Amino acid sequence: MKAALVLIVVGIAELTAQVRPLQPPPPPPEQTGKASIEGSVVDALTHEPIQKAAVMLMGRVSLTAVTDASGQFAFRQLPAGQYFVQAQSNRYPVGRVGGELTRQTSVTVAGDEQKRDVTLSLTPGASVRGRVLDEEGNPMPHCNISAMHRNTADNGQGLVYAGGGAQSDENGEYRLSNLPAGKYYLMANCGLSMPMPHAFIRQGAAANLPRLVYAPLFYPGTADPSGAARVEAQPGGLLAGIDFRMIPATGVTVRGRVRPSSFDGFLQVSLEPNDPLRRGIGGRGTRTNPSTGEFQIPNVQPGSYELIAGGTAGNQPYFAKIPVEVGTSAPDPIELQLSPGSQIPGTLVIEGDAKQPPNPNPIRVMLNPAGNQRMFGAQPQAEVKSDGAFVLESVIPGRWRIQLNSPGYVKSVTLGDKEISGDVIEITAAAAPLKIVMGTKYTQLAVSVSPPPSGAGSLAGLAWAATSSIQQNFGFDSQGRANLSVPPGRYHVCGVEDQSRMVMQNRALRKALESRCETVDVLEGGPQKVQVSRISSEDLKRMVDSLDE
Image 1 (spheres, rainbow, N blue to C red):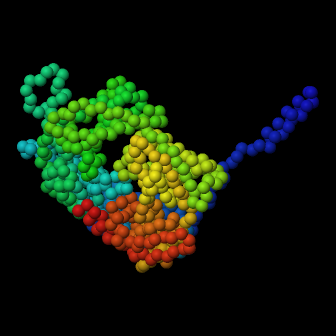
Image 2: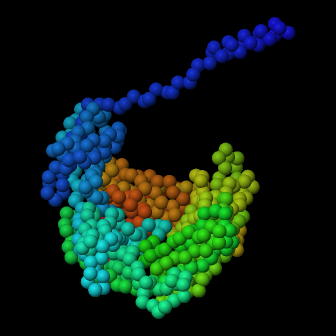
Image 3: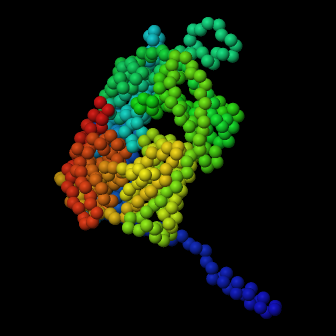
């Protein structure tokens, strides 16, 4: 018995002696060569050098440089190849889309070539100056002034902030600085409120009194965004005399209770304007009293709203929404009854096979918010079982976009007994079963552009489906050719000068581009070809400027 014990101990010792700590693999050798790219960054208007501008080099190696006092930069010991060079500076803002090609360029260098004449230019921002006054012409301090534009993203509407902002001083004066050149809606928002004249009231009733408030005002003097005018800010210019004469209005308190009142989790109540242009800027939100479920939203101006309550308790989302009309007097207290998210059973059928094949990474069905849909808690998703069944838990009513985490795509959707066009579904409180057919047959689409690009990175390709969320950004080779693998369907295909990511995020711009792009019906089976025209950055900018005229 003792001998056996000794043998075991010796075996363990020998095994231990053979184990060596795992060493991380050596880093790949840095690519170096004898080529170099040098140049300068200058102001697009004055042509003066720009100091401390960041210059990014992307290609076979990725490097960053900072310009010196004379605006010079240099990248040395580069391997031969094509590179993309871009400059940026905090003092020179980037525009929304188009007209920015001078801050970037593509450069090709041979084995020991020295490129020393690369020039990048940055366009200076604009300034807007004015005053904020009350109805009697007195200066209003501490008012926020914002530049805005229409929300053209796929998941939003109304007006959105364009970045930056300013606040009026004690003389009511403000200055918005460093705005990218372009056209803007300007809005002044003053948080001042005061009780309106009233007779004697009972003690404790003051909270129900109407108050004098100043609604957000759009230049040249309207509370309605549809009546606002855009102002144009020129590069490096000053737009002066943009004054606001604020308009007083009646503000009342909207109050109520959310049930169940003892909600054990995060819960928020918001009042959102029905006017699409005011969504995102005219909403008011508050938290409920955790013990009683009571809430109050002060200084609400007359109008049509949606009162929305939402939150999570554990992993379960809860939601409620009702329309509310607000007049010049406070409405009666409102009760909101929370409802839990729905359970949606479904079936996924893979094209050509009624069952899911063995897969180490099972397919998951996911729902993403579409339009202005809100999401409380975790993203609704479910794993598809081997028989194709899945169950989406805790889905609140609204518009949702179906997504699959697999190489396949959503080919068709049936909700209850209704066939859905595209991949967006409308979920109601009484959710119906969901059937998804996942397509797997892709088609090769050969795209060519005329004229071909002048260099790598100077032209980007875009392709998006007409009835679904399928989108692709792609690049062209030096001959202006590209090959895509896409699901069958109708597509719009373009070749644009840079800014491809911004175009894809801008649904209104994509819609406007449809008449300039090629429309192609991609069929199942063999490869197809399409030739597209080149759309310049200047054309893109003009189209953006015209979107919200």
